[in-house]
Amino acid sequence: MLASTILGTRELGGSIQPSLAQPGLEDLVGGLIKLDDLGLLIIALSLAVALLGLWSAAGSSGAIEYSILILVFLVSAALTVASANLLLFYIFWELTALCAWGLSRWSTYSDDYTPEAFPIRGAGALASLSMFLAVLLLAAENRSFSVSGLQTDRLGLVSLLILAAVFLKTYGLVAQVWRHDAGRVYSISGGLVSSAGAAVLGVYPYLRLLEGNFAAQTTWREYTLWIALPLGLLAGLAVLSEDEAHRVVAGAAYSQFCVLMVGMALGNRQGLTGAMLGLMAYVLGVNGLFLCLGVLESCSGQRLVSTLGGMAASLPSTAVLFVLSALAFAGLPPFGGFTSRLLVGTEFLRAGQPVAFAALMAICGLTLLVNLRLFKGAFLGPPRLSAREGHWAVLLATVGVLCALVYLGIHPEEGARLVQPAVAVMLR
Image (cartoon, rainbow, N blue to C red):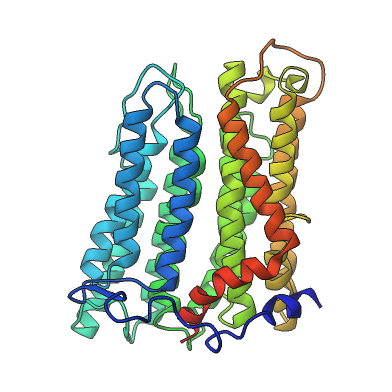
């Protein structure tokens, strides 16, 4: 009933006209740079996260340098999603990854500001190679660098290369979030990197290159399920016994990224609407968790769960916001992620794929479990440390995130209205 209500609010491709269908807006730079509603949605989500980061960093030492890094990231991300040329897409995709890694190494609560924007690691390097090979094969077979209208006789190989690129690149971002150096405090940048970074570097290439060109073929969709579901379960299980708080949240974030990719593998209207709603909820929810985690770590001076405990007595506002963010991120009602779970889960059952549905629910359950375990270890029990509530701008930003998620949960038709132009682009 709810699913039909959401999807019945507007007819995709009917009453909704692409907002960029006006002359001069879609083709911006001689066929090299183009924008459609899918690209605009990714840019809008990235901009929203960037504004959260700028708001949270206001007044901190180093905020100006941090703001410049965010601006460079936004420009690079916008050029990535607007590139209509495969070569340009790859260049800006790599540049965005470097900017994201630089942001992940930045702290607005520390006196040591060394961006370290080039920490090329194994996962990121393999992702770069994999995407380069995929772009090279597509360009050679089509004798064109256009990102649309692509064809290939090696779809299995090309899709595996693209899938490897997006999963490895996103993992590389998450791995940077949890890496710590002595004396460094990792605060608000983790949410930006894990949300906007994953959207631009992971979700968008998948949708643009595979969904946008090979929607009628099923091979790559099956590969997505076989890769994303085990990875999501593995990431959730891997952090069940983790003691480092950022690794717990980062592992949960990667699990939910895998859930997003599972939803994207559904190529019909309901599946894609649910997946895009899930993307909105993911981008907001992961930032809520990282913002609370940044306050906890900055106020306590600790990042290991075993050294915390009882922090709810000292940081009651942070404790309440963290547990609400955990519930929202797992997709429980009344938060917006529930609508996405409903639409995607219903579609898997309708398609006769109960195993995929069960795995999807298991990943979401694991996400909730690991975050609640973190909440119990850090906030409940007898107090071990003394601290005072602080960073009210960050906490206020978290309240804003939760309010947006509640609004999307209570008014799912509004979320559907926002994502339907992007869905229409993918259904063409």
